[in-house]
Image 1 (cartoon, rainbow over the protein chains, first blue to last red):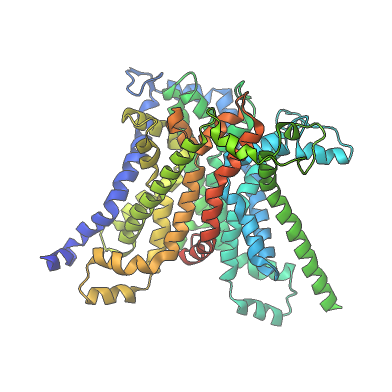
Image 2 (tube, chains in turn green, blue):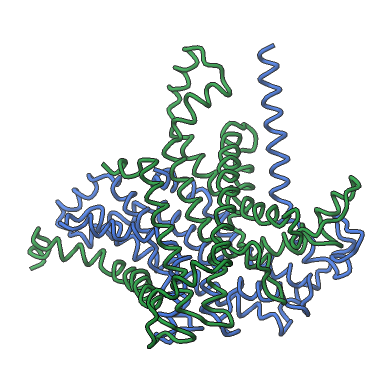
Length: 304
Length: 278
């Protein structure tokens, strides 16, 4: 009997034994919420998950006409425009240097990767209450004071918007090490023969070798890194929430979509219908952006 | 001349790395500095890099404070992180193996349905997921904090890519010995795949320990707070001692730093083998 169970005709059964539990859970906790959200977004749903009043596209129109929601999308775009290239350059630079250093390579790799073990909550705590503390007792102001600079209220000054420096550096510190590891793995897969051939052809070590050998060989890694960076930037929540909100609430500037939806859906209003409409709009934008990007970099072609 | 130039370049690179390494370590130092300092030391207008005195009593004070439920939060976080890691490894590795190795007509469609969810960041599903979990009555329960997070498309994807590259000869030998998919998987494939399990497990564990949005939304009661939620609640509170908060934060990263030092080489090896970046 066991023999027949193992036969070809039972492959379908075994496929679902292996894949089924995962697929069911994913459907239940990703696909069902998505569809539910779409359904909710057409209803007036204050403080309830079983709404009765159908409002059609009203929630969508309200969100698209809501200056705060639109500015939250702008905040995300601006944030990505800073954090994606900054992390890319820093993590690639670290990988190149760590890969070639001869002394204490494991030490450097560990130090740069160590922030990965920190949460955004903990990092925000250090950034907010120790490094970039407003007027009295911060590291940044102390160091700048040595050079005679005035004290800066880093998190509350909007002109110039110093809070951007705080928000970008937290994430940069937290995530650069992880992407450095991806680049290190990519660097180690490049055949030494390529470099030997380049040297024979007269390429000088340094910029020329990097431009014509290293960088093109890292293309697959680069595509994955950029994709991960953008997806992660879409999810920005923790540092905005922990850095910028205080007991008095949340300042209206610099609020990315997720933080804004959080306040709409789960804040004092509990407007789940409106929040869901915002979530659906955001989902569509992300889907389009991801597909365009994947086509652009030719991700689909790699599958063949 | 060339030799001197190369040596100078090397020295410059090392110096730059050292400076960057120090910058990367400063936040860790500040956690400890403030955690073991007096309140006056942290808020002194003439801030100094080294605290004026070290207060080791702060450690005992932290765990005795009834306002900051650190012990309970640490317990919650540990249970959640361990359960999430084990559950994710089991579910995602089975699914990844099935997708990679069991021929099934619609396997590709299933794979793309799973992969497609990667495009839907948790950011977008949190409102409806909250709705779902609350209608199940799972708010502020361990079930609600753990079960919905167990189905990581990312982990499944990594396992599938890894198993696609797993040497077939080993499985063929098992097949000749009369083992089916199930026993081949447990007796041959899993024991030979420890690095990838360690790599994915570490990444999942770090993610679960540091997760913030989901525990914030679901773990509403004080009894269900994770370490991250407890810390976050107190960064905006008026009456908490700063040194206590910093010490609590330092304690909260200890488990991860340990896991991390034990398993770091597996992460690097795992990334290289699984082609997360391919």
